[in-house]
Amino acid sequence: MTAGDGYRYLLNSVVTGDGDRDAASALTRYYLESGTPPGAWIGSGLVGLSGGVTAGATVTEEQLRQLMGYGQDPNNGEQLGRPYRTFATATERVERRLKKLSDSLTDEERATQTTLIEAEEAAKPTDAPVAGFDLTFSVPKSVSTLWAVADGGTQALITQAHHAAIHDVIALIERDVAMTRIGAKGPRGAVAQVEVQGVIATAYDHYDSRAADPQLHTHVVVANRVQAVHDGKWRTLDSRAIHAAVTGLSEHYNAVLSDHLTAMLGVGWEARERGVGRSTAWEIAGVPQALMDAFSSRTRDIEQVKDRLVAEHVVKHGRQPSPKLLWQFRQQATLETRPPKQHHSLSDLTAQWRERATELLGEDAPTWATTLLSRSAGEPLLRADDIPLGDLEQVAEVVVARVGDRRATWKRWNLHAEAVRQTMGLRFASATDRDHITHQIVDAAERVSLRLTPPELASSPPTFRRPDGSSRFRPKAATVFSSEQVLAAEDRLLDASNDRSAPTVPLMWIEQAARTKNRDGNVLSPDQERAIAKIGVSARTLDVLVGPAGTGNTTCWV
Image (tube, rainbow, N blue to C red; front, side, top):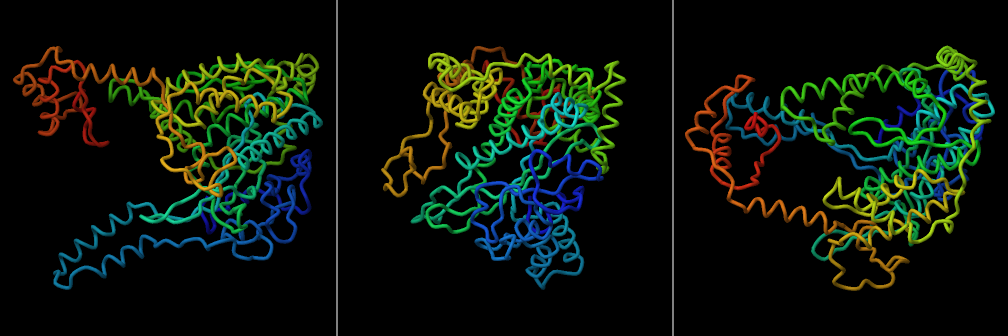
């Protein structure tokens, strides 16, 4: 989230209300109002603010403007650390460059240069200071489906489990992710990553998608202002740590939410495949896929556009898109199909959802939900010491193998995310138990992995060492790993590139092909022809063509 008025999107659907927000009844308090509940403060960093802001208290628009808009204390307006940086607009950058043009230019030359400068600056993104980090926590579709049609008491319990899972993730962020940097760069400088006094965040609950389907989710914005433990000064978060941990935090939320729901409602869970390019989803056992699909209008629209983009890619390039490109297609499809947000009361939405579900199920939807819960056998809730150490070592090997299938190198948070995925079939009695098991698996996975980051060449003073002995001059969880299997695969590729026993292609054939129009009516450029010729006569079993995006790499082969 950017500074200035970047925070305003959080308020677009909020119902005006006063008073503190109770986690269990946050949504039901606003049951009859069109819109969503006001935000609530969360995070242990709140103690550093003036005025006694407490967790759960309502976030006012003025408080949000002070903190996210200007980086100030939301109560007294005192600046928290340095003010946000200001960046020149495109117009200001153009004016600055035009002033540097030579007076000797003719009017025509000046006009040409002006047009060129305006185009260049318009194409550049406008920098903006970061006011916070928006983390969205959305319950699985089966949970939203059950929540949408269940009675009020069950809805409140599901909401309570959702909020509890969010607080578990915030606790994980504060313990293992939230850091700030001190020091200075340069030949004689050094930058240390140090601990902070927790985070300050706001949480905004939403209960439907843009298609008015049930989608219980919460926008949590972590403010980019934290207090360092060692001196109490306000600084910014180390954004590198936040970005590195995002996937692991998402997986952790899904896992602890499942634990809370099983503990509160006794529900069981099952894995469901979601198709090529998408990870396995864990859903509540007994919630029909047909009902979930009926409440997934946005997903259907997105998938249709994504499939169209994939088909166009296959026609143009003759191959399926890579996983990364497939993700980009989904993002593009999400934006293309995004309708304007309509505001409804939870009361009206619930009535509509129950009516739709009753028609599809062939029975009263709330009664179906009650029956599902009464028949749920639940799953045993494990403590950390219930799992033998030998089993954890085996899981760690699987974790490394899975991560190695997708990456050549990895870091701790990559292992953390996969460790949580591998234990999603287990239910734990508390977030502490799950954390303990996850950390043991990740520690074991690091031992199984091959460390690529070299050891420290010099020992840091005790003041600059963390409790685990690592240096604060090295970012936490930044050690890079690989595996013998990955390195062996790289060796095989290198051997193939050095093997010159492959057939070659006569240059005459290459020249003839280069001058023949392809199916798009294009011929190869001289650079492309030279690249193909070099590969065609190299006799290498494996050769590589490298070029910037948009320079015709694919055209060379199609």
